[in-house]
Length: 515
Ligand code: FRU
Image (cartoon, rainbow, N blue to C red; front, side):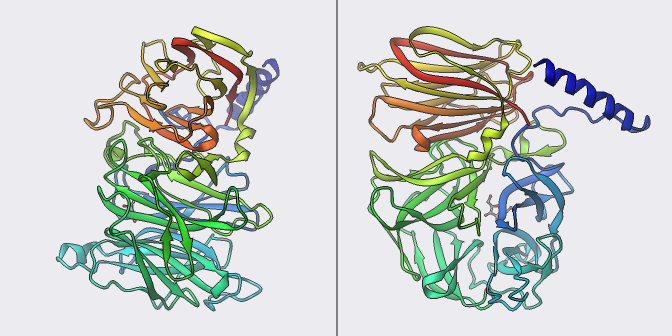
């Protein structure tokens, strides 16, 4: 602690020395996340074009640099070598005469199938939706088409393909968000595209000429809103040799707790069509209200083997009115996706990317104990009490009727509460008293519920608190919930409160987190 204080003062002196007196000090912005990605300024929504290349994770994103509300879309850009610390780069793609640049993906064309680079210098190719706003205004239905652009310098500069659009519109209003991957067995590219109420699959030998393969989902899954931002990828089967394919589909509105959310299907893909396994219910990658339009990184190194995901940590119900001044929105933490056995057969689990342990600063173990009543985990007012990770392993009592509350608080009496209720076998997230809520009537109307997906009496969780968000990863990532909140003063207190029968804590730790 002393060491870091000393370092801090040294840094402050150095910073002061290097600041010219005319330059105003950078104000600490209310609600600005510390360890989540957020844009330097102005409006951001979906993550786009996430691709790994030569040691860098690229994150492009829906960006409107002229306002803090949605408008003519660009692709903003950042890179990271560790998925935790991000370097902002100049805007990658600007709107042009064909339209605004909506969501899409990026791939490394290693075999130079497109001819846009060379085998020695494979192009990074972005595949995105052109949204032609004037054409939409004029009453046409074909205002969304797919275009491509390429970069030969690690994503720093981009050239739009002169033959755009590569996939014209057949006369359908919602025709967007291409996610492309290389399908090695047939040596072709596969595109998953959101088309109103279903996903269309297209294929191409070269990222330029595209042919329709199949359609999926008109009669399946949740249809409370338009389908957007699909992603199709394989994952290892949890108990047998081989793999299953997962299809992510974001829908807005129609999420399990209102507004925007992302459902998924597990099944098989044969290079032409996706055949889902029989689901027991609609499946959600995250039950919280603030994880939308998430997709996975392309071209992650094979030696790594992970499938990494990131979502937009907001909800179209209120994203444009949240009380931040200079920018709007953050991304979720990066997550590793895996298939795990569950009460509903195999399920998709998302757990925090391993790199996030680098954020840990000080760790205090929670001694094993049987707990009834309240345990103060972090004192209110604690200077390092805002950025936290909580790990807990518990044994639940046999009788239903016990509720475990994990509560954050500040000196103003505001609080955020995450509760596990044994009677419902699930989690309730309550941000109704967590600070500013009156900017939208939809923001804090009710608690959000995330059901558990296993029947075990052992419960484990990892919980991340940033300045303005909570992310719950329970039971190895089988039950997840991501939500944002806006306290007038940072939360510092953290308590664990048991009502009902005592609960056995078998292991636990509180980690203070840095940036
Ligand atoms: C999802 C979405 C996409 C679209 C983009 C526009 O949040 O509506 O379907 O491409 O945002 O910004």
